[in-house]
Length: 326
Image (cartoon, rainbow, N blue to C red; front, side, top):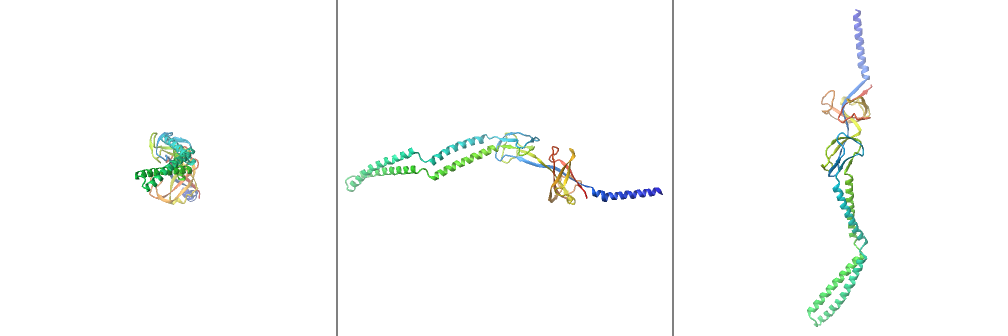
């Protein structure tokens, strides 16, 4: 009889303990588990114009420092073109200087002398023409002599008029429009030279930030077009975990909440916090490990790792936990 009483007593104590655990201890100590993968920012490095690769300094897996030279293009043709443009600038500037200065004093003096010379010749021919015209009106000379005199008169007058016009042009200098056109030529060439200088400067790719080479898509001597990726780098300034939470547990996490991130290569967990929770539901991605694989709607969230190190690799599967004290 005593044994039965003892068994009943123990059973009651056990039931009470289990009830207490289920309703008090377990509720007070609830740990949520999530599963995701390590992610970090990547960047494709490319040139903004067509060219031939000259050197590539790094290979896949190698670390890079900010400002380190990574890729160069062959700039031989660009430098030759720049030399040609600079030579044209010198020539066009000389022409512009001449236009702005006006005609030479020697040219003006020569034009003035031509006016005087042609005027003297014109006066002589004019006298002959006037006499022939009077004689022709009196029928005292032949029509042939009159026509010859008139022809010489017209020719001398045209020469004199031309000399006067040329002298007036030299005195007034070049037209303003001619000067402006020449200025525009010089400015266009200078702009072209600056563009070539900018291209030569941009023919070298430097590491934008500290990171690691993820992929090397091209080799030296390859021809690459504008925007074509040559290297892909992973930036080391920020790592995060991309994970998913199902709808029943969505209310259990909040933005900014602290989380622990576990990886297989390190016993000590990484500390982090939730930096983003998607407001839009989506179907569970196939590559996400969950304790219950089913096509439920889930919400994506991101855990920012506080102090990342070399143990973290992109795509690495991780387990995330958070302690919920109620």
